[in-house]
Image (cartoon, rainbow, N blue to C red):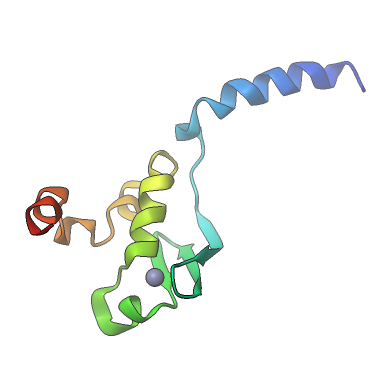
Length: 96
Ligand SMILES: [Zn+2]
């Protein structure tokens, strides 16, 4: 291996510990749900999912909310919070 790559590998390992350096601008993933696979996408800070819940007008769903949690540090404020404020964690705990 080219010796200059060793330094790059070490730098990559340090970056790995700092996900906040990464900002997802666009993304598309296949999400394996309990009943089906769904396509979830992010574009211009707007999420979209092809599942039934999203289609019914909530503009969010469990798949988007899961990705917002997983990618939290790598999302801008708008992508991080799309419609999450409608159902704060405290309310979810109260309902369960
Ligand atoms: Zn969904």
